[in-house]
Length: 74
Image (tube, rainbow, N blue to C red):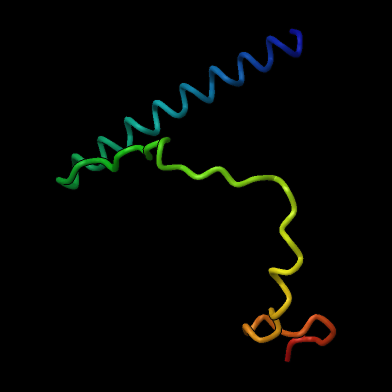
């Protein structure tokens, strides 16, 4: 098998596993007598950029209970 065939097989198996887990969640919810949780709405998702944070965000971090950078926690 080529790498492409392997990746296709993995993707197909993951899709099948996802469908089976969703069906299982629905069946379990039906047994408990309440509706299954709805899938998250993609339009409500927030994209987090990969760019590094601005270092000024951490200027006063010692005052926020995170501990000092040059000392060990007790």
